Image (spheres, helix red, strand yellow):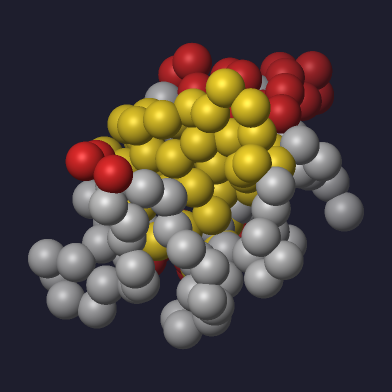
Length: 147
């Protein structure tokens, strides 16, 4: 299985990142005014590009989840083998045929065409350990198992 720049996962019972003002998000929203929570998972190398550009991408395999991501949703940044490195807010989505990440540029083709525009809210000075129940199997995962 190849690494993807980003992933969305759902994790039951885990606490989402702190909101502005120090409070915590406490669950997945179900109304249009409430955000959903996602985990974007990928290599640290891909995260360096993503944080600089404010863009994450997923493959065709994760398109069904990408379709569900909406502006205003909250995303947690997870670097495989490193930990939770920050969080942000979805500003929009788009498809792109332009290689962005190192592997895409090396291979000369787009692997993760479904892009998510992210406003980075916080990058931790030191990565946080991944909660045991946080799903990170794909580049995009729901934060809770309710899907």
